[in-house]
Amino acid sequence: MHTLLLRIRESFWFLPAVLGIGAIVLAELLVLLDRSLVDAGTRLTFLDALSASGGRSVLTTIGTAMLTVAGTSFSITISVLATTSSTYGPRLVRNFMADRANQFVLAAFTSTFLYAMVVLRSVHTAVDDGDAFVPVVAIHVAVLLGVVDVAVLVFFIHHIASSTQITSLQEQVQTDLEAVVDAVYRDGDDEGVRTGAVTGPPADGCAIVVRTAGDGYVQSVHWAALVSWAADHDARIDVVAMPGDHVIVGDPVWRVTLPDSPDRPADDGTERDGTAGDRTAQDRAERALRGLLRSSVALGSARTPLQDVGFALQQLVEIAVRGLASGTNDPYTAVSALDLSATALVPLWRGREPVTAYCDDDGGVRVVPRWPAVVELVDSVFASVLTYGSEHPIVLEAAVRLARRLEDVAPERRRGLLEPTLDALQRARG
Image (tube, rainbow, N blue to C red):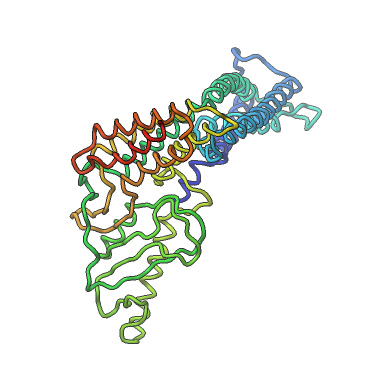
């Protein structure tokens, strides 16, 4: 379920499918209402009467127009997005697909088309089957939906014009970065997490190495599910493959330490005493862990910024680097990207540390992740500036400004860590 929800979040099919089914159900219910009104001899005087041919024309016009608008709008949008992504990074296409507004607009157009088609099939003349029927209420609702879709189209044009601007793209990436930084790095021990040093697994425990059965990038991990399982089995899970790591079939993902007992497998996976009971116990443990792996780890063909803090920061740096390309030659984009990165990096540098353990309700260490160190993240930003922006004085000035911001808020343990970086930036600036 966790993996499916992640897929749905960035899909163009789920919301149109839900609204499409809703449109079909609504159409059938309104047609049934119209039939009930006709059978009861009730006439709604505030609705204009329509002939069968007139009703068909209205429904055909609305359905055809909505499908045409949907296809045309999104073909143009994808063309504009392709140009934008080639300039500032192909991975920004994910932001477009994950945008709820874009998904809703496509759903609104396609569901109106489906509604019109379902109502259209219920329109009959006396020539067709000897029983003329025109669903007046359903047709007027179709007209109302058409009016709403015109407003949706105007909103969509405004939204696309705004969201494809570089400032909007940077703000979207900045929001993703701040969210993942807040989740991964904390000011200290919090409810359910630790940030200090964590001791190794118990020496008297037995370990099972859980390996992946698929290929791809680790996109996310359901930490709560791992903690719950580990607490139920009095186990500890050391995470080997973190979000952002690429794995292939057979690569280790977890090292699970279980309480040592006669019916548990040894570290090398062999049976303790060769009995059938040991083999059965080991098989049960491994099957349970494989099931947990499938349900709590999402693999995909590309990295995502949901839990991958390195990729979230990389997206913002990539916009800056591409702005410095000779074909683009837009150093001001790089400057704004560095300025926006400060909103996440300054609180991070001020005193946060990566989460080193996820704990159960009693405070026991259950899951041990391997998040990147704070210094490693910050250094990656300045390394990209020194590599690609050394010929742009205003970019170097922005990097120096960011480094000084970080140095001003640095706690005692980080004082002076950015001095070599500042010296390198000063030398590059001349």
